[in-house]
Image (cartoon, rainbow, N blue to C red; front, top):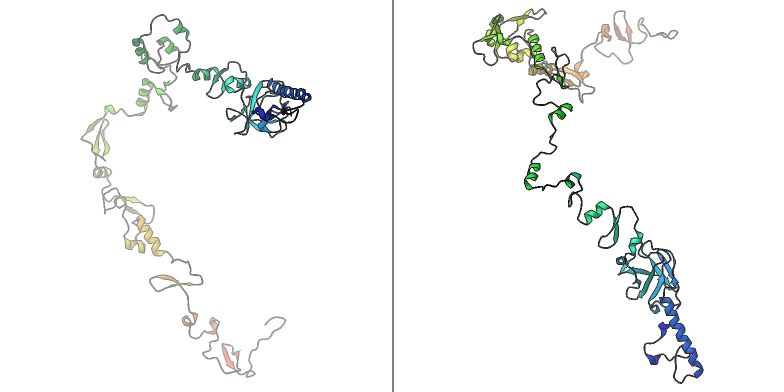
Length: 449
């Protein structure tokens, strides 16, 4: 059998026929055969564990042929093999043509780079998990470092599970020495400072507001900024000296001189006027001389203009003059400015010297408007003497009597005897027997009646 997996741990049980066992009372000629078989079995195990066998297949599905040519997965002992290609992720291995089983490290499937190319690994079949456990390599042994990109400046650090490559800045944060947060970045000024940095100095610096301008006046002036000590800012871009204010800009400030000049040229010198009396709300101003004004009430202003309460204005129509201010009210409302028409006047429209209000105008329209035509198809407009309405008209009851010949009728009051015909007697129509007298007949001659 030459397979040590078939030997029994009970010595007396290894008594199979030569050369697979050492039976009792065996023939002397069989001794050498059994010894050679034992040596061959040991040599197979030796070669399967010395690293001379190499896997084939891909980085996710390995294949391995051992010297023992095992017949069952349970027969496979510890095996050392060389990996033909790095794994690219989770992988399986099929040994001696048996079913492929998952390769695991510490009970977890492989990740890319766990099995580097040409590395010797020790595997054993785990019948409980039905997997092959990798015993001789693992992430804790730095094999996963081989899969990291060799980027200039990267640092290899552990993240608790794997070895990973991090940039200098990330690694500093991982190590708790981030510049600006945990440690001070190099500064030539600080490096050249020999004096101690005391709490008092720190307090002074902390008292300076953010972005404070601590440059001198020369630098501020060169930058075009305005200083508090400047006595002339007329040359600044935000100042304009324009006496007539013609540019009317909302982005510049006028000089004092141009402001005064514009006021002097366009506004009456209020300071030269004197005010008599005590002005009150809604007063009108009246010049009493070339240098004095006084307040005038509404009534006084009307009197000053000789308007009174019944002043007239020419309408330009035959109505002539009408009141400018109504006599009904002196308030500044419609009733105070013009005379309003009454409700009766709105309906009759009999007075051309008054004006309707909005409500009055609506009343006029509503009073003289036709009734609605909705749903009144085929109806006639009728009136009962006070209101109009759409209604049906009964011709038979509305029209009666005799229709004269002059109006298109016969002038007859009776229908005449049976068989009679209508004939003309020169002045009207009569009903008479056919052939009597010299009646007129309807004659068609050349298509003309």
